[in-house]
Structures are given as C-alpha cells and as structure tokens.
Picture 1: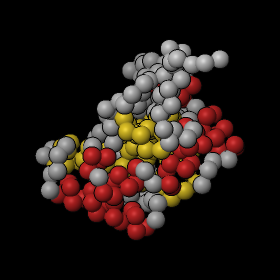
Picture 2: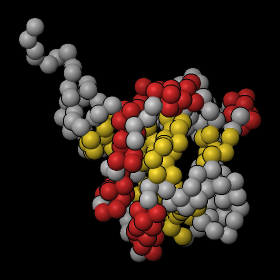
Picture 3: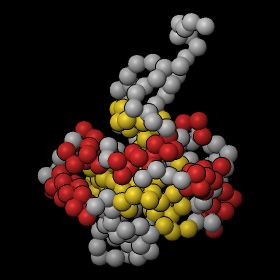
Length: 235
C-alpha cells in the first residue's frame, strides 16, 4: 500500500497520481448513505444552490464513517510515502462532500486550491460514484503545479494555455486521486440525469517548525515533532 519510488516521482513531476488503493464497495455505500442522510436532514454546515443542498462541510466533525474514511489505511498508507510519517488533516480547507448534478456550477472554471508552493496541500479526492466524461470527471493540467506561484488564471494567455492542455481523469466509485493543490484543475459539466458524488480531503505533513496544537488541523498519524532552532538542546 506504499507508493513506489516511480509513483512518488510521477506525483512530484505531474502533480497527481491515482492511488493504488481503493475503498471497498461496502465502505463506499456506507459513506454515500451517511452523506445523503445529512443532506436530506440539512445537517449544518451545508452549501445550497438554487435552494437545494449540494455540499455538506466539516465532515471530520460529523464523525462516524466520515472520520473513519479520513483516517483509513487506504488513504494514509500511500500518503505517508508523500508526506512522511507525521500527517495532519486540515479542517479549514476541503473537508466536504459534494453532490453534483446537471445544474451544478461550482468549480467548473480552471483554478488552483492554493496560491504558493510553500503552502500547498496534498488533496485526496474520494469518488463515491463512477465519474466519466459524461457526468463531469475531474480535469487536470498535468505539471501545472510547477507554474509560477500566484499565476493569474484570469490572464487570457495563462487561461488559454491551461485549457488547451487539460485532460480528463475518469475514476471508479471507491477510487482515490491525490493531487498537489497547486495544480490547475476543475470539475467537468455533468451532462447526465444522474448525480456525481465525491469527498474532498486535505492533508499536510506535520509542521516541524510550529509548536503546539493548531485548532485548524488534527493529527491523524504519527506525532508533531518540533525542530525549531529556538528549542534548547545539548551538543
């Protein structure tokens, strides 16, 4: 369940990789059922579009199968190959389940999730339904995480180049896609009469220069080592 050196290099070079692991059918059904229940009951926090709930946020705080998914070996074992043994989950970025149908308009434009390489996130997309060209699978511009920080996608030249190099990434239900959040990407348009559901999760390597707990992050594997030069030590 660890990534090979070749897979790690592909992630670093291309900015994304389909994880070799996958959630079981039973796990996907349980996760999807819990998400649909919270949507039906409007369990806050939620996001609406045209008076219908399209996203539930704060999935870590919901506990249960959501938290079980965030901390599962299928995600954390391969992530450890990218982030090391000490991994934090972010509470204030991603941390949601999105339900997209033909009327969904969120994230259709090409974008980056973060602006600078020193603050990037290892984002894991958890697909709860099959995604394909028809229902709007994730679209990626390979290698675009290497573009300069703060590259403005409102610039016509940057946007046109990015759009011309975009590739679709169909994924099965239970599939896991890891991306560098500096990469340029978007969601495709759902042209079907069915839904497309996915969960978006964000992870960091534990910050070895930050002392103490951060209320916006939760440690999900390992420990928080502090290696600042102001720490007393003996030589």
